[in-house]
Image 1: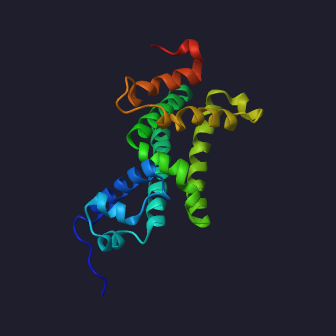
Image 2: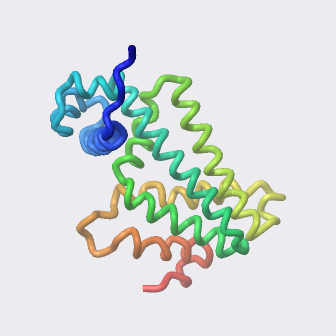
Image 3: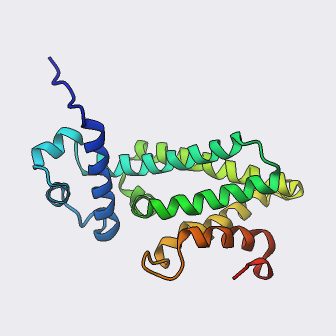
Length: 198
């Protein structure tokens, strides 16, 4: 007979994922042991293995959880039924803010997805491609001619180039916050440097 789950199983599991994401992001996936994850979570190693099979499963759950949240954001903005420009602006700002709340998870996704097993990595990347398509569709809705010239996806990737690596330079204790940066990114994408407001 299977052991029943404790009432706080999901909450504990989420806390473990958060601690593991922080460790992977700051020390690297290869440089973090399950002992260190258990210690950071204040649980025993057997308890940790009750929740996750191994370190690879931790990385998979972090990557997959983060990219699925991003896909959900695309769906939420689409459900608002906004006109093309407000729709794209909302997507950009929602993503920048989400990255601000999930910096560790985002770093694990961008830097550690290569450690996943082939099938797991492909599953994560498939969801990531859906996110890119959602943005490319939004770009094409604003400028339909871009799709005719197959520029909607390259411009989308340039946009992601602006926001995906913000975590490498924007410091939590700095003068700028993700909240402040979000409209700047949208302004820069829509109107170039003259459009950015101080």
